[in-house]
Image (tube, rainbow, N blue to C red):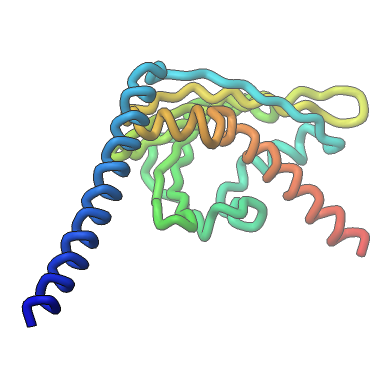
Length: 189
């Protein structure tokens, strides 16, 4: 009987040791990520640009038709337009990760300049996007400049070292391309 108890105790001790070791490794990795993240500046500015073989007005209409974003932005479930926003358009984006963020236009000069910012404040980041639409031969260039701040050192590490700090700008430009590819496929089946 004592041999069985010792064997069970040995297995329990091994399991506890392994569990504690795994927990310590997770804490150590998180700590290292946090320390590296603290060395990354909180604020950033990044610019991306793409050519579209569309008119400036077509691009502008897509950019400012906020309720249609879920049709061409894979990350969104729905968008609700908010009322009572003192002349600027405000909306809530509901994404597939369960996050709901409020955005608002800061300024716009139709059809060539749009500035959007996040109004949601209970998140570890903030940002503004300046979108320039410039007519060029055969279409237009869309240039997006993101100016943001990431409070969390762990999230800074993730955005800079894993996703890439330009990932939001690049995914938005890709989504706009998808929007017009969908339209072309619909018009020319």
